[in-house]
Image 1 (cartoon, rainbow, N blue to C red):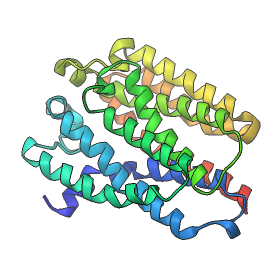
Image 2 (cartoon, rainbow, N blue to C red; image 1 turned 30 degrees about the vertical axis):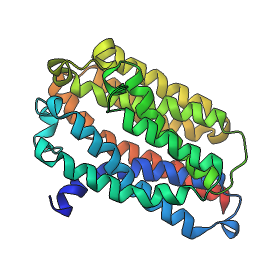
Image 3 (cartoon, one colour; image 1 turned 90 degrees about the horizontal axis):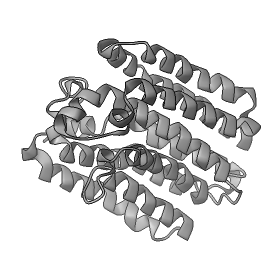
Length: 279
């Protein structure tokens, strides 16, 4: 198993999700760049760039093999991880994560606990005995959880002290919608393999309506911070939900391929808004 295959397994097109959430949390927690420990920020930024994503998607692919071999997304758009490679992937995950776990022991209790929650949500999303991804509603909750606590980790790493409850709730709404929408193209493959997800429980159209509602809630919760920007940032998602609601399976999958691009663009704008607050 070469390095290219390992990198592909970690879904480079999704790296921005964890790294961007971390960067957003860092900028939200900083009072000024003069007081920032740049080496520590960059060190853990490296973790959320690659090792964290290898953990999330490597474990996901190991425990989802029976589902994935029935999923058309895995025949070119993503990678099918055959059982012969599972032990090697576990080894790569351990080796790439261990240094960051040790380093977190020398941070604050809030940072360490945030990292603990990240591992809890990321690992038990796919693995027994919880295997949240096969439990409707818990699947979206656990998926959203590891993204949101990444931002919380970044916030406390740089010494953030404010009340972030509203932002965390908004982030959970946003991330739950992100996961639920991503589960819609997998409905048939998951159903054939016996896995029940939020998209299977609610059905395609109800899931998409729920996503639109959650995106609107997230924008409303942060309106006090972002003003009209919150409305502008949620519009692409509402348009995507509208188009997806009216689409058949083939067209829906095509729309889904634009989803990471929208997420990356919106995340970048949020990052720069937070960055300009510090400058």
